[in-house]
Structures are given as C-alpha cells and as structure tokens.
Length: 105
Image (cartoon, rainbow, N blue to C red):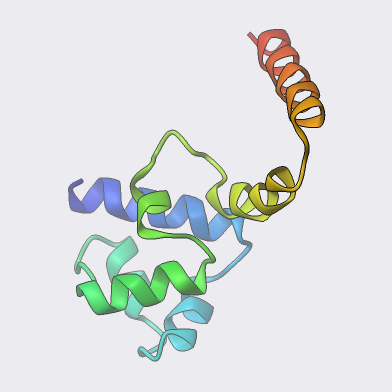
C-alpha cells in the first residue's frame, strides 16, 4: 500500500467513525497536525503509532488493510452479536444479507 492508498484508507475509516484528523492526532498523543501530514501524503506513521491509530478508530491492523471491508468499525461492532446466535438464527441472517446484496446488484 503506497502513501496515496494509505491516506485514502485512513480518510475513509475516519469518515466512517465521524472523526477529525485533529481529534485522532491528539488522542494518540501526537501534535494536532500529525494525521493531516499522513492524509497529505507527507508522512507514514511508525508501527507503534499505526497501532495507536487503529486502536483509536476501533479497528485492527488487518481491518485497515482489508480495503474490501468498507465499514470495519461497524463490522467489529456487529460480530460479537453474531457470535451469540444459534445455527438457525445465523442461517436466517445469512439469507437476509445475501438477499440484500443480490437486490443491490
């Protein structure tokens, strides 16, 4: 993932979380313009800071790089509930989601 792709993905996830660059920067212990420097493709975060960004946005590093998952934070909120379902309930949810996706095509 190059700087442009990295910046785009970070921007998408921040938008999903309704977060500003300044807010995320300060909450991860950086100066207020830090995330903007990443979004403007002037910098990459260190691994340590990248992990802090992911934690701040309630995603995993895997979620960040899974660009097919448009809403990773929301997905992470739903998964614990899905784990509580029995087989029949889970099967019903699968059928509903499949129908919705097929209707959107």
